[in-house]
Image 1 (cartoon, rainbow, N blue to C red):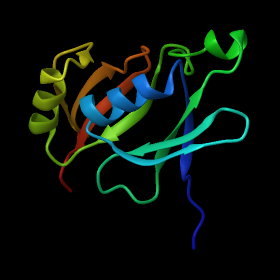
Image 2 (cartoon, one colour):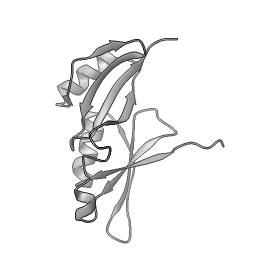
Image 3 (cartoon, rainbow, N blue to C red):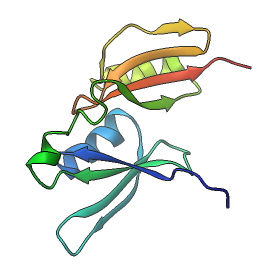
Length: 131
């Protein structure tokens, strides 16, 4: 198997609120939710149909980690959610209360709009241009 990035850890305040947001508002699938001996959980969510990449929802353990929830990338867009139907997903996410920071843009590379997750992490919803 070729190398690939399988998981990206995302600090969260609470497992259940994060699972709710990512599965309901973003439409992700809950791939794993397993208790660990130390009281934490191994929680993995991924976009529907994704096979090689997912998010590990990691509950912040201490004050240093809690201070980084929502600001793991210093205010930059740090996550890119690709779609095959920008209008459909933008409308569904908006109806679910996802906070978009801008109106959709149509750039040479595709249709895009920046949104925030429940903690303030910035994401691009992006439908790449054809070709």
